Structures are given as C-alpha cells and as structure tokens.
Amino acid sequence: MPMDNPRTTHVKDYYAKRDTVRDYDKKRFTGRGGRYIDYTEQKIISDLIDALPTTIRSAKRLEKRPLVLDLASGSGRFAILLAKKGCKVVAFDYSQEMLNLIGEKCRREGLNVGEDIILVQGDANRFPFKPETFDAAVSMRFMWHYKKYPIFIDNVMKVLKKNGYFVFDLFNLYSLRALYTLPANLSVYVNLATRKKFYEFAEKRSYKIEAEKAHFFFPYLFYRFCPDFLAGIMIWTEEKIQKSALYIFSSVIYFKLRK
Ligand SMILES: C[S@@+](CC[C@H](N)C(=O)[O-])C[C@H]1O[C@@H](n2cnc3c(N)ncnc32)[C@H](O)[C@@H]1O
Image (cartoon, helix red, strand yellow):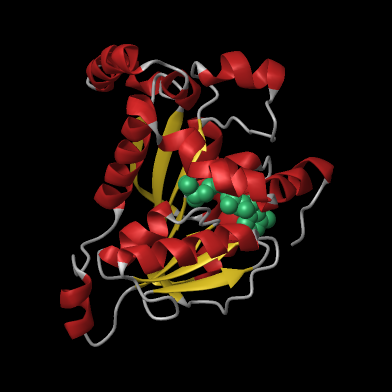
C-alpha cells in the first residue's frame, strides 16, 4: 500500500542526493565514537542472524546460499557484512547513488555484483519481490524514518519464506533521543516508537518476537560529535549501563521477528 506523504517523500529525496551519499559513512562512522557505533551495530546484527555458512568459500560449497534482503541498504554496511559471511544478498534501495556506492565497495572487497550482492533500485512502498522469496531480511536505520513503519514490516514478512525472519531497529521514545528529536526533528523525519506499541502490533499480526536487544543509552549524535578522548569515557559508561537496569532507556531497540 503506498504511503508517501510530503515528509516521508522528503526522506527518499534526502538520501538520493549525491552529497548525502558521498558523506554518509564519513559523517556517521569515523572518529572513535563513530567507529564504536558501526562496530556495535554490525556485532548486534551478526548475533541476531541465524547460523550462516561463515565464509563465501564454505557457502559456495553449499547447494544453495541463504538469500537475504537488505531493505534500504544505504552504503551497504550490512549487505557487505552478510555477503562476506556467505549469504547471497539483495541490496534494495531507492537511491541509485547509494547502490552505485555499494557497487564500488564490492569491487574493493572482492565481492561479485550480481553473484554475491544483487543491486535493486526501488521503493519499499511498492515491493517488486514475489511472496516467500527470501530466507531472511535485514533493515537498519530505515523504518524509524516513517511513522507508519508497520506497513514496511508487513511487506517484508510477505516476501519471507515460511520460518524466515526479519531483523531491524526502532528508536525508543523513552530515551535521551527524545530530548532532541521531539522538539527539533532534524533534517529528515525521525519517529520514536515504544516497545509496548510494537509488542501490541506483533501480537495482532501473530508475528513472533524471537529476540530483542537494546543499545546506545547515549544516542548516536553524542558519539558523533564527541572528541576521541571523551568518546572513550562514554563507551566505557555505555558498556556499564548496558549491564545495568538502565539499559531499558537505550535509544535503539533491535528486534528479530520470525514469520
Ligand atoms: C539512514 S539510511 C540507512 C542505510 C543502511 N541501512 C545503514 O544502516 O547504514 C536510509 C536508507 O533508506 C533509503 N530509503 C529511504 N526511503 C526509501 C524507500 N521508500 N524505499 C527504499 N529505500 C528507501 C535511503 O535511500 C537510504 O539509503
């Protein structure tokens, strides 16, 4: 079901711009804080993904490699991670510039476009995939750009095979993120969700929440703009918080939803 409105169209246009694409990784994942964010996200996703062939070499010996959809693949951080672990990945994004960037990264990493990663340009409002196509799907930093994010979840669940699963993230309303997102809502729209509402939605649809993880008590912005010497202290504090009851106020919640 199409769900564009002026604010969400703005999200697509924002990421289609050449400047946004060129600066995407540099702006978010450099410096000590940025590298911590990238490392942590990749680790959480790896932990939530079912057992994989582990390397392309071992995967190619299998009759069939797991087929994974990376929805709104952006600069390809997760598409590349999963392809290196032996999945065949469909990187799907509205921005052709982003897909071109993944193509460049594949060449640098020795991955084969079309074989290890298939690049597909399109709009997640109008999925071009047949039902029951994928073994798994991942979507990071995407759905929190949309208030009606459950529509995307429904679309993804349809294209998953029986027993397939979907790993994604949402922003937590009950976190420090609310301090600056609610009043400002920055350059692109950002939605803050609650666990309770998400659980109600999953129950209504009979989706099984198989795993859940929270992280980033200090929202991304804190890490991105923090000098390296302070980032070390923040990371140390973050890791302590994640082991305490305060973790429930983390700004990002990662879910694994089983079909
Ligand atoms: C914040 S980036 C996330 C990229 C990547 N998943 C990551 O975590 O680094 C959001 C991505 O969503 C894509 N996008 C936004 N709206 C979309 C839509 N309706 N259909 C497909 N892709 C969309 C943008 O082009 C952009 O690459």
